[in-house]
Image (cartoon, rainbow, N blue to C red; front, side):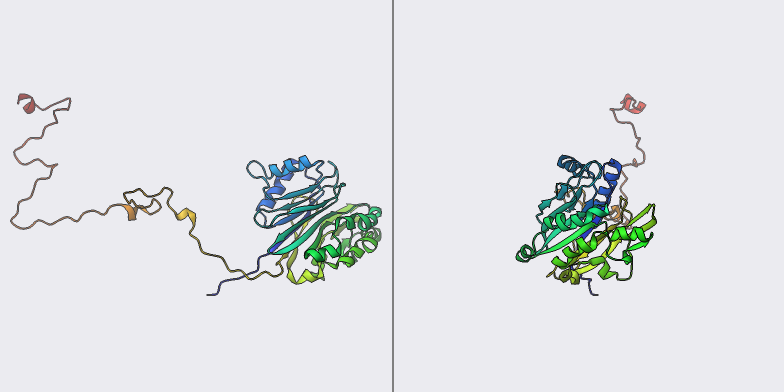
Length: 348
């Protein structure tokens, strides 16, 4: 029977949490991330106001005894807006460096190596005001990115993800009217698209799902109700062959849906199911004694001593009286140490 083999995947998630100042919401998020499959998590709109507050949140994690013990980088905004973070699991991702943190809490770049592949990951929270997006993509975002020559020299793969607050085409929005669509387009053609072309980045979800909307945010305003795909992963076109999947993730805290990207690292080899190991619960709870007693994990039917076989009586032989049955003509009395003795013993 053949054993299943697969390539080790790097799993990344981006999510706009819409504020983490509420402790119950924050704990629910960390609980989902601790039990989730993602190795690198990008968060937007954390609403943390200082580095000390960010560290306290990570130490608190999902509650007592459940801190976030992996690497965490933060760029703080105010208690009412902005704030971005990148969380990495321990033992999955190698040493992590924080290479850029925007003072306004809207951009954050980290670098790490995983399975001999180098990555530069940028977390983005673009302005929700349409008129401010063009300047953000033309000035603020390029300042957070390494130059193409630096990327080539280091061999790192650039990944940009987050809440871009704009769309590329009408296929990325559902509902609303013409005015709502026009606002969503603002900032893409004259801001984000030139950056994508310069670095050779493509929309990973759109490449894998050419005929869907994949909305990640729903809103109701004066223009009516609409949904748009504002959150996405931008990856180099040369890395698309290593993208296993890119999916919208539902059910996490926040007013946006998450977007997960699964990569098989370039140059990775197929891995088998691993080496078999004995399950620890099968081992004895206490080590066996020097006398060679059986392990406590075995059933009592196997550890109980077997009864000695009873020998049959041969013909013509007398039987020995049992210690519990007195011979005929004798009287049984209570031991002398007893408080009451029989009259025969007292007379003797």
